[in-house]
Image (cartoon, rainbow, N blue to C red):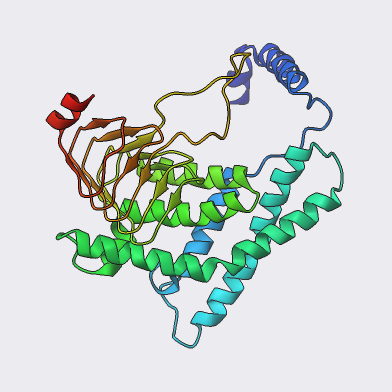
Length: 302
């Protein structure tokens, strides 16, 4: 069998050499040719989020054989293991940003502090997710129990990932946060930037194709349907033609708004409290509270 394989010439050595040259050139362009620091691992972050989900909901997303007496032990042991791994991923990000090649005490201490701050907010995250689950249960007549919502609804999965990622984003680990957001995006088709601010009782129904941008602000008791976009209308550039980062460019959605399937809302506009935005609406201006915007009305107002 080996002789049969080796008689073919695939050009492996030549390809490896060409890939090496391209890799070295890329590292030189990014000024990282000398021992480039490692990035956080997407695979390890998936395991971390799975562990955190089981810590938050041990009876539903944890082990099936847990007893009442053993839950706290399971939560404590799992959380300790997960946080140790999360710390290492955060430290990798900080070392990558600093470009350090060896031991970086500053990155080490900052990673410890970010992990501690993250841990302290987990009870608040659990309370927020409880409100999201209840909103989904009350908002969808097909939902038979809150437990069904937790284990079946892609919108809830995406929101769990977002609640965790948002803490990391705000406390100084934006790359790890973005990677967690992309894990949810890959699994659910729901793209929520970890910088987006989202209030309690948030429900994404169906969910595929939903996009929520970095600077979006969403209030309490908001419901979105599939293919809704809360995006940017335009991207500002500086005098050299380079995109300006960090400016406020996404919508503000106030409390108790419902946005139906396919609606696109662009720019730093405000959707007033209690408004209803109809399906397939294209909206680039603010609307007052209690507005009802249909596709025809939106087209007339543009």
